[in-house]
Length: 605
Ligand code: AGP
Image (cartoon, rainbow, N blue to C red):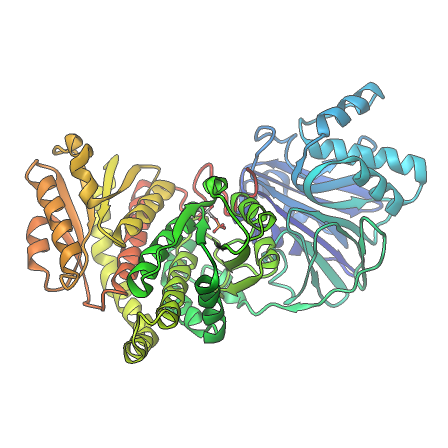
């Protein structure tokens, strides 16, 4: 996935276009570029590297104009080279295009253009499209007609924004299976692949739907259907995300800032109306079979949810990784809940399409307003966690887990497995929970940092937990891998003795997620596994709850959490593991907010 931005203004837009791709950089950061119209001609500058690097090389900050497009790239097809970076110019330099997605028939079209004498600078599908535009314009001498004629020839998924010196007052935009939104300002309009492209300048947005194209001027926009050409009237959304939450606010990295946003994120999750949560719980209760899915972190959120549903409401629903969802034999009467921060993840989207095609009802927990997943399901809960800029998901994942707990509690009531007074007691504990998170963040970060300093050299970790702490361990291991590039394997603590124990020696480090002692069975099983590692000379580090002397004795180092009810214990463990991954990566000098090879939302298969 990549970031697209475009601005059309009545005045010079200064550095706003550059700022806007800065705000999108988390979407992709291996190369970037900007194209503006200056004195009737397209000025295009692009190069490889992050935005600051490219700015130094190309002086993007000096590019000014009233209309322009920009792009920040995460390479999927074609290597990371200056030629492959966007925007792409047509041969006569009168058209420039930025594009997200894949034009699946571009090879054939490229060969046709080559045989007609067009030469290419890059290996991209985008350069094929921009040359189709040039060719179509020669035929029609009309920009809208040329845009439509070129679009008519391409297949695949794409969002595209076109700039042309033939019309210095409008951008031409299209959306098909890849997100694109408009931002509406005063004497100025915006287009972007997500709202961060223009959140700094306007809170009014329009989400484009499948197969819509737009001619965007500074004071007006014309949205039409690609199929029929008919004009479409759209609702204007008021974005309630706070701009400040998308800034770093004094923290050295977004990851740390977003971990410290977590008390607020939990408060937001608590403010989601009970009616929405109850409707979702009812969907589970009324469906023949129910499934939960996500991928990467959101799969682990679904897996934690699985334990909550089972322990609170006695309902066992499978959690699946959405890239493997097609194994499920979905039938009418089933229901599928998808969890996605971005709402654009290809694997999750594709699995939802599969579920819908087979007659299932669909639901989702999503963070990004107007995202594809939020629009395609029967029932959506917007988690309201605010922009999460760091590629590594922290606050969004924690809020999603909290929402899963809330749904499980409603389901517990529906299924009569949870008594009303117990439900009320948990609800009032939930209201206070953000304060406990604040205490943990403030009191524990120093300890976590010290342990991370001592252990950042460790190349192999086993993260172990029982019951609900097993998916917590898996999620925490993923955090560790993605941000430190070191190996961490999450595993059920009881599974250890069935093979992996052979690896244990002085060099192996383990991190145990120890439940509060009140969870007797889980606690006992976790301590047995700790013994097994310790007695073989392995290094045991543990996240424990205050007063747990047995666990403390088994660990060489431990992080002590305040005692909370067992339903909330996994959240505190997750937060500590997020901090541990962060400080380990800090010690290793990693690119924390934008780890190598990753992107914030993976919109390709
Ligand atoms: C999280 O830290 C990861 N970057 C990744 O696993 C992510 O959770 C996954 O790609 C799913 O993304 P989504 O929530 O946007 O659908």
